[in-house]
Each structure stands twice: as structure tokens, then as C-alpha cells.
Length: 187
Image (cartoon, rainbow, N blue to C red; front, side):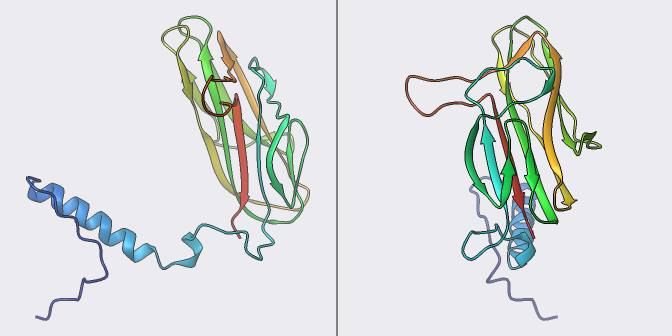
């Protein structure tokens, strides 16, 4: 039996790794190398692209309850943005990621965050973060890939108790926004 040529596949060699771990890592490398040529999985670039994308954020700490506010437009192309929404200018498939940074104001504080499309909650987009101790800070991510039509309006909504969406201005480094909202058209 002739062995296939695996020269284009990644091979991982770890000193002292068990055979099973070596097999898992080699299989992962093999799968990744097989998927890499697919153009549908490539990260879109802006070279001649007509795809829309946006990243909004907030330098203001916010209390959960209602729609999240975004006063900063970090980047915006072919999409419209207001202080609480992004509206598509063309139909297509989009990746949507909302990442609020949550700080507990009391022990046991919890927040829920989810996506809203055209005033309707997006199914299965809800995430919950509960903090054990006051002062704990974490980021919780809600994400979705969906087909949108021209004029569709995306928002992020939250509810919670004893937490805040926390913007931090460190002495060194850039602003740590209370939320980052990213929308990218993928086709």
C-alpha cells in the first residue's frame, strides 16, 4: 500500500509527549492545513472589498438594563451607526460580536447580554456572567453569524444586578472600553 504524501501538512513533534497527545496535535495540524485553502474561511480584507464592517465601543461605564450605548466609532465602512445601533446598507451574511466588560459592584453580581435584530431578541445569543466577589472584572462574549437584509438594525441589550459595564482608563496602554461591538460582513 502506497503512503500518501503528507509534506504539506503540519507535523508537531513534542519531546516527552505521549503517543495519544502527539496523535491529537498531528490530527489538529492536518485538519487545519486541509481547511486553510478554502476561500470561505479566509479572513476578509479591505483591498477592493465592498463588504461592510464596523467596530463601536464606549469609554463610559454603563449600568445594565436596556440598550447598550456606543459613543465611539472605532471603524466604520458601508454600515450606519448611531449611539445604540448598527444598520446594514446591504444584504449578506454577517459575523456579530458583542463583548461587554463586566465588573461586580457587590458580591454575586450577574449580567445577561444578548443581540437584538429589528427590535426582536436574537435566538440563542444570550450570555450570562456572574461574579463571585465585588471588584472582579471579566469580559463576556455574545456572538452570532446570520443573514441580514439591507436596513436591518442590530443592537446589544443587557440586564443585571450588582454589576456595571466598566470602562477603564489605565495609566499605561489604551482605553479598556465598557463594551466592544463588532459587525463584519463575511460575504
